Image (cartoon, rainbow, N blue to C red; front, side, top):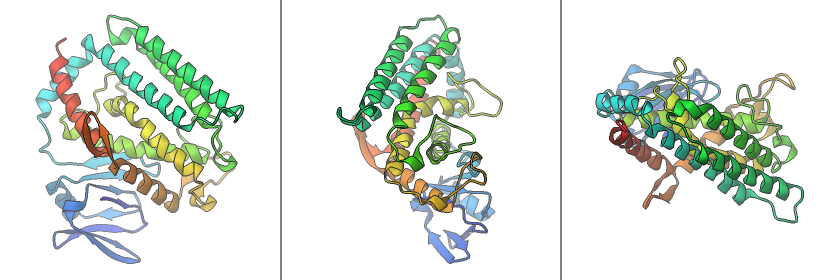
Length: 331
């Protein structure tokens, strides 16, 4: 269970070793052993007793902004062999093996984009949408081939080229997706911050949720979220999160696409003061999206011979990544 507390004036506290949420509508109690994470917006409050209860049960607590991006987090100090793993992580950053790791990472991202386009591709008779999807798939495969063929002694020598081809592939990917939606969900291009249309606003919020979950999985695995391999180490930005999230973005794309195709959001669930101004998700839109994302990440699927929820696969992948860094840090 994921507790999301974004009602104005809501309070999360501890009573009788339970998490208790108090709102104007009343109280709800939750035993800590069924709670996986707690997300709190600026409109709500949490007591220190509730935070300590969360730490004791290794329940991560995230403080998020209006866009769903984590602004802060509370976690236990007992995670992982942080020192040894972080040393290996830094060594790997400057190793020759880092280039192949990045190429494999981007390959997975582009493969996921192609798979989703193939799943959504209209029938051959639906023109011009079918041809747009076919062209986008061919272009992504072409960019993937260029990335695989690039060579360099170090990642820094070729990273700008890889970023350029990755970005170009993403542009073709979203151009195709834009042809799927009814008018109220149509969009011209991928718009990160601030979004001005429902699709981009929903996708930004879903990505923000995923950022927080991946950062937590990295911390639990003993990895430093701020030491990136491919993305630049900008000040106070979790660069490694931006690296590893690439292979999971299509999961959020799928959730948001399905919600838009189902026209799941009433017009009044989103807020936009000016016609061309930023569009924000209201409480109802956030509730629908958050529940959909959490349900999707909890769904059991089989990957690499194991049947687990998608979020459990992410956690295991981060532990596997820590072991990979240790094994390959000196190569």
